[in-house]
Length: 246
Image 1 (cartoon, helix red, strand yellow):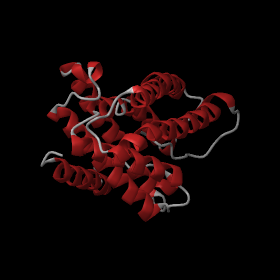
Image 2 (cartoon, helix red, strand yellow; image 1 turned 90 degrees about the vertical axis):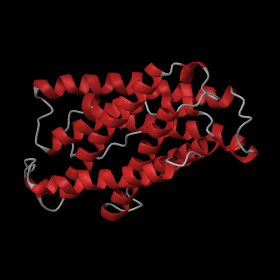
Image 3 (cartoon, rainbow, N blue to C red; image 1 turned 180 degrees about the vertical axis):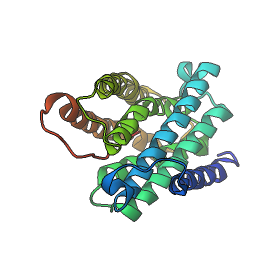
């Protein structure tokens, strides 16, 4: 592991929390109703998660464009920008885990917490051995989809109607990126971890690593089904719900 991974992870988590708290300073218009009072934490977390998704998407795409070896040699190629991206992503998972435990509770969002623990543990292991960085960056590509997932939540919090033209266009991009930028990279990560050789890792993690992507895939398939049912299949009006990112 590089000397900057843990400090950058902690700084990243603190930075997201600071962004969350700064939303209460009055520079951003408050949403209507309960999201400006009793459920304000849900609005702040949705906005912070959308902000994080933009940052991580930029880092993931830049890493792959500037270092295509991450795709060609995903098990052995290492670059600092990839580890920086992974550290910032791990920081977000720490922030979001703390926010959920503080404001929502472990039982209501246990699938999200499970996702965060699995991915954060995977990133820690990959950074420790400086291996599998290509798979780590591929697993960050779903953050592109997360931009639309979390902005969807922000739109509903601010009272946008699901029948509005803007929301109808948004939901199409939400579904398209959910398939192309979420399911496809996760399936690719499943294939790479199941078929690749991992000589750099401890034998325990060589056995554990291939089990992680299928769990993440199952969680994300459930999330996309909820999105599809809510925005395309159901004719009823649904309350704003939290949809997990990445």
